[in-house]
Length: 169
Image 1: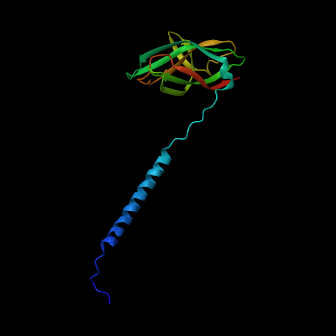
Image 2: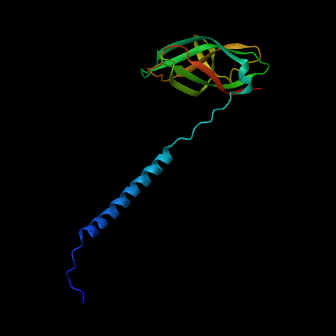
Image 3: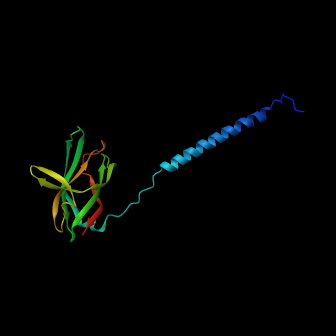
């Protein structure tokens, strides 16, 4: 017959009984961390070649400016000339803009910035989508790229422009 009193566990049994829950807890935490790392890991972006017709588009006469918007924040503008040296009409274009720091390292990259054409609208100039002012063969126009935020590490030099998307007819 079993009594109400149970024998006292030996120190080895007592250690084993405490170790198992601790190991299970560590395994659970490790599993949660692994799932979190895998879930938040970004897939590497594949480098795509610029559109074939992009070699016919040339940028020149770049000018940078900065202005305060109505909320008091600074907005940076990159204006310049864009020329279509090919035989098709460009109706849409997006640009990757790379800003460098004082050491030539990348300070900021803005991807797929829409290329906007400046159009006189009375006393002001409006930046309109390229689809509203297509760039025909042999034409050049003034363009504007607008940036709400530019890295403080930027070296104040002209950024590099690379066409990433383009529609030509």
